[in-house]
Image (cartoon, rainbow, N blue to C red; front, top):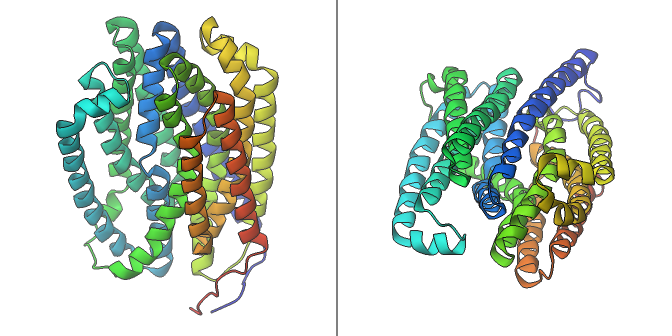
Length: 422
């Protein structure tokens, strides 16, 4: 079967999309509010300790969380249409072995080069480094399992995972910081225990796939699917997270803390609009597997424009009040100057994310090499040119605009790859 069977999704499918997106937005707002509440603890810890916490989160965020989730979401959605779910069970068993090997490698690296890593990240305690290793390991498991849930379109529990992760993080972090005085170590311990809770939930919700007899899958075909997804979404994630690490390396500890504060507020914009792309991705994968077409991407793009622009405008207008409400007075001078740049830099990134999701869900991988080159150029630019925090954000904004232009060109001007007849 080839060609388009539908030009528009039926009314029932549109209603389901908005219901599922609405729930994920509610869950994201609740979870994001609790995640954000952790940053209120900045008032109880020195700026340098808060900056260290933000940098450790940024290092953990460089784990390919988004790529891994999208790989397993794509495989789960695709094999479900084709009736080949046992292949995903085999992939999960393979992923377990790979992650255990990764954990062993991380432990060895810390044992050998732990002192050098502590000095580079300006850490005073070895415990912080081991906590970061735990976060990285759990951050690999979570996207694998949540990707399976996304591919199954189990958006109910995908939302609860976001809420429970944030609730566990905040409750533990608040207790350890306010009662035990652990500062960044307490905040990071909250992250670890929150991840433990939600990984357990994801294991339970995906048990129907785990219990299937593992079926041998074509590794060459799998690599042809997952490598472009890993590289494409990895490049986008790098543009989303790398600036904080560069700031930590090249700027004083206090300035890093102020920058992390502005980044926390600004990145909230992306988390608000991500649920629509999260719901859209497996639906487009299944449409592509059936050689169907729909206008779902256009609906998501319009919603993202409205939400992201309104959010950035609101943060810009209320930046003095917001900074004072969340952080101490010392954050105001730096935070309010960088916040508008940071907020508006997130707008083109959120739009590019929608377009990239659409392209990669449809298997249009010709955009991937351009995304990788763009991410490499961004990293090299930040490494060589970083005269001020504002300059770092201007570079981020410029590259995000280029990213949006690239994704737009491949969406509307680039010729899609031919679809093989089913």
